[in-house]
Image (tube, rainbow, N blue to C red):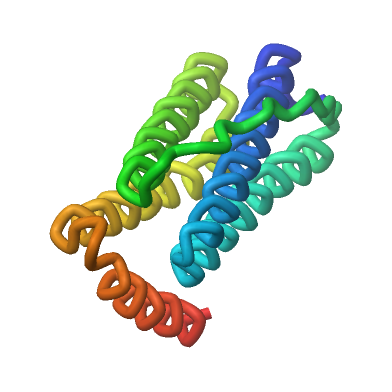
Length: 168
């Protein structure tokens, strides 16, 4: 095994963290859809898919370095937020939490002089900057529009999502 048991365990924990975040975004997507905010719902489904992809990327790395993937249970996500704003606020806090988790993994890799894992984690460091920025921008739009004008945010979000698809 090219990584320590401690790093293997920490990466497995991050897989669980990413999957829990994915599940939370999926629950938010369903609530947004139930509120009639179909575009918001689609966006949060995309977020859920991204978090699952992040988890899968870590499991692939673990296998590449001879580690052992150990999956743990996924927590039941919160299912009622009551407003789009409270969901976006929760999503932003979640992204900040994931950022701290990634930074802790980077610190562990550096303390162990595990440069391969440190290099692997750089993508996540960069990704979290984008994720926090994106959720901050969405929260700002929701706050500016207010609950009664969320259809305006839906229109802007639809345009942003279409532009993102063109970049891929």
